[in-house]
Length: 150
Image (tube, rainbow, N blue to C red; front, side, top):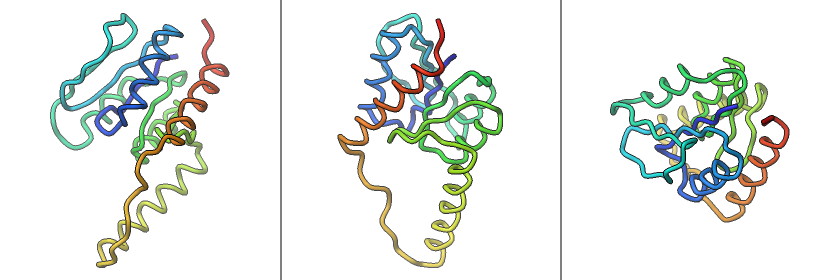
């Protein structure tokens, strides 16, 4: 099992949780972004800087993942594509994407996009909270306990 992180939009507290996870479990975690990123110097933490451009990090992740891998992303289309390839995906707020809920989220995303395009002003996502951090920490620990075998 490897973990790939869509690092451009990943909240800093989540990155810190993942750094600790890598240190504790020795799982290889690859952070993919279109700008330089600092990370602890551990053999199992990798940072990949892709070229600037829409979806370059997504393309890299989708090219590399396998069915035993997990991606961390808030990007719903990326999560849907990863699930389609047989991998797993976890939202930085702690929700494990499934075939069912990712389809619902894509539909809601498209609906909200249509509403915004028609001139309706709607609030964005709520800010990242301490409870989101705790939810993610618990979710990643559960996932690793169920899926990581040394």
